Length: 199
Image (cartoon, rainbow, N blue to C red; front, side, top):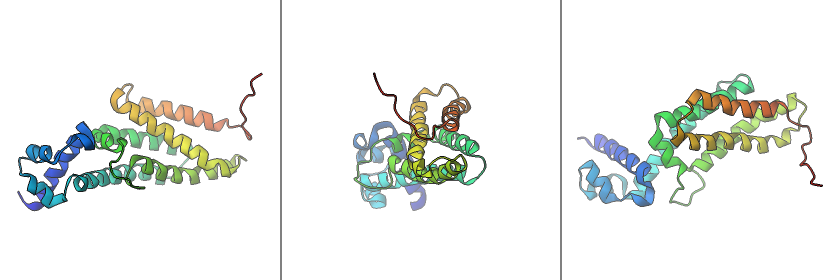
């Protein structure tokens, strides 16, 4: 096996173990045993468990970011954007279950980037601009767009976490329900929402 092939093998073995057992539950010994190499080989390529974990997480973040950004950059009606984004997340979960399991776990390294929550925050920032434009067209206050962007993206992300294990109903039906709630709720926004006062 070439050095590049060995590195790819170690990454895939580690990815599966991190998805199955989490960061804390996975050891260098186990990665080496599954890859049928000695521990020094793992250390040589990645410097330790934190190093290999960082590469695995970075690759998953890039894959998911690419899918979600592609859905948003396609342009079109806001409802279509919500549909495409929901489907992009569910498709990523469907095709990269191990990667998504790794992303939704808390990162063992204190960092501001490279976590699922920071990724969701980045997507919400993109959605914020789209919502602000839509709010202006509807006579709504565009300053409220960041709040609604967080709610919308959070709703999709949490539903994705639930669907990771549930898998029923199917991806298209889940996306349709997400869009139904998001779109029909957004289309009937009150100009100045207030909580109902208890008597």
